[in-house]
Image 1 (cartoon, rainbow, N blue to C red):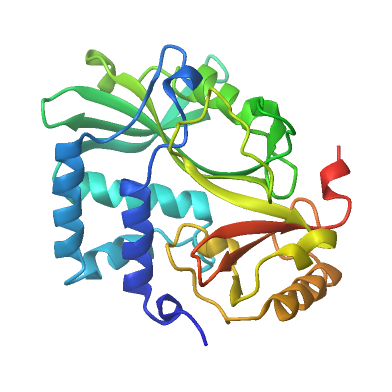
Image 2 (cartoon, one colour; image 1 turned 180 degrees about the horizontal axis):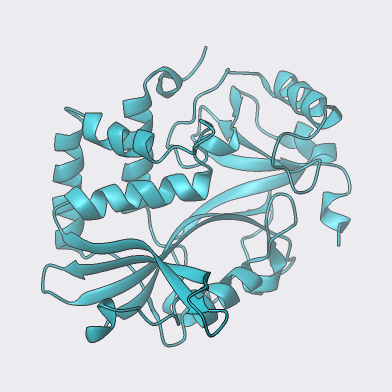
Length: 306
């Protein structure tokens, strides 16, 4: 049995947009230093929920935006870029904010002549209903916590392929991306910086969740478990969740019993790495259908990797 969103791109896009707008922020104010952490007010959330309900009647405009953003080679948008385009659609058409600029390139001269190079970009400049100008940088992240004990540091949260750490992402987000000044003509006014963060943190299966001051109290949580201990997972149907579907509330896929799921993952790890993989084998996200919980199964030696 497979999920219905795989055959309904409109339902998939709407599910992702709903999660991106209404799931809790990932970070707490302690992470931001001088920059803020974006969070919608109760009134804004109510307006957004009503707008999403209306959008469900016709997702054609949403799908048109995503289709127009597809890469020139015709492949699918990577997860981070897809999230950017979903948020841009909300800022263009939603009920609470007004988009001023998206993916605004920042350029600097490389010589006394006219040659210029891009040194980065600003994700979004926008206004809220009160006319306040905002600079949002979007970060959608999924990290596994390797800490043991009652507390965790941001350097102990790592990506499924162990290439990225939360500490490095926070440094880049708050000391570089949100520190950028808007270029002309947008430099004529003040833009308040805020990190728009969504995602999940995954903790050791069966252990108490350690506390991290930089994470929001109600951030999305899941579990992770080593392949060697995966027989300890509860029985029932599971789905292997491809990266492209990590933002969906009910990811599509074949329903597999635990042992069939593990055999499927073993075969995948034994195969050549997929296109774009930075380190292989990588931890694989799974969804426990009866409970709705999601987690990662990590390959042998993952927890001891540098």
